[in-house]
Image (cartoon, rainbow, N blue to C red; front, side):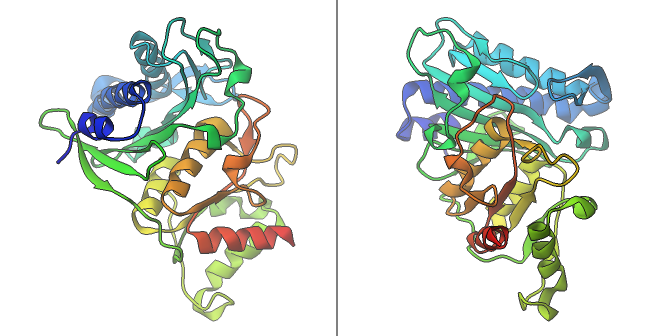
Length: 323
């Protein structure tokens, strides 16, 4: 099995990108250790603070964010970083000419009940070396990402990433804490019979999403002429990982509860990196109207509707959305 360092050395990634990914992998191995200890490490429960989104933070949200910030800054792996947990970006004078945007702990509501959570990261080129980092520098379409990935903290800890040449998959060894390659060239099947969506929000959905899910629920007796199974982990990393491994479609649509917001997931920290990975695996990622990677961000914490996974299903949602 190839190690992560060997794989990156043999890739087409620049030395700066390789260093950034190795740094993030090391940070995530530390987070994995905290999660593995669970209540023994005193990481369960509320932190008693809120993030910039107005959401209550778990203790591990704060721990994971601190590890990302301190780890990236300490390694000088990037010249600027932005986190879902912080209002503004952070400048790292003298850091490598890259920007990192990340969700340090995705699905943190699962942590106290020992269900899978994850970390998501996106790497962009810095506009110009030596220029102090500002929020506006992160407002670039997802197609400008030079790398993206996630770490899934499940029964085993897995890293999936891309530097624009397909996907690479690694597992963290419990023997020597080394990342070892367990897969590559991952492809999402065009057709599927699995979908992931939080159906408790069904009464709030707009008509196209309601019509689409109704089709799936009708199964073989409906217009799709085949049965579908629903899967929902409440962690985007876990749901997307399943889709990358065996196909499916993930939906987190906008709904009528907050009509002024175009969705719940964050474009820079969640949608863009996951869309990058899905497209590298021959899938599609859309907000229902256009590819996620083509969206021009206008704010650091911008939200977006997300439909991603097997091509057949993403295209079907887009057609329904067009009316």
